[in-house]
Image 1 (tube, one colour):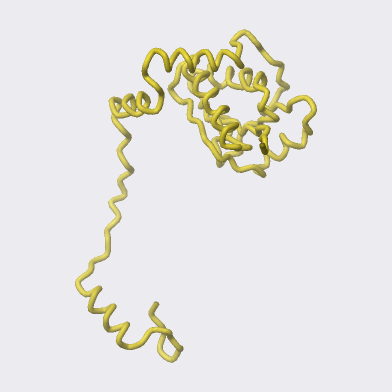
Image 2 (cartoon, one colour; image 1 turned 45 degrees about the vertical axis):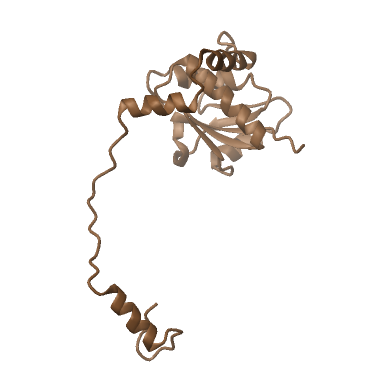
Length: 188
């Protein structure tokens, strides 16, 4: 902290002299204005296999877990406009709160580039993690892409017993390429 002349300072003259001596010869850092390079495809594959169990048993277990809650043949009816849902017995005010951004997601799931089968497994894993960690709000980024994930994810979510409500995310969380999901939290 450098004080202006005439103002009181908690730094002594010795402290100021010591700082100037230590900072002597320092040069300002120049901003290179280059965005970071995206990871290589091989690095992304390596990360995915580390994150998921890559043994056939792990993949089969994740698939069974996802199949327990989600049916690909089930189609819910959604009204026109922004994608939204409120579970039976819940207040429709929840969707308004989600739309306004009153809830901040504690976990994010990015489904970009995944197949429907992988996305279903990841979604099931996210909901299990939210239940274990007692997380009440999460964000699912399905993207635009071909539109298959954007269309299917809401149909899966309405089938899960933990889902209280969801709404198209506010702009800061991905807008119409994402959903904010509100979950039941057990305090046990």
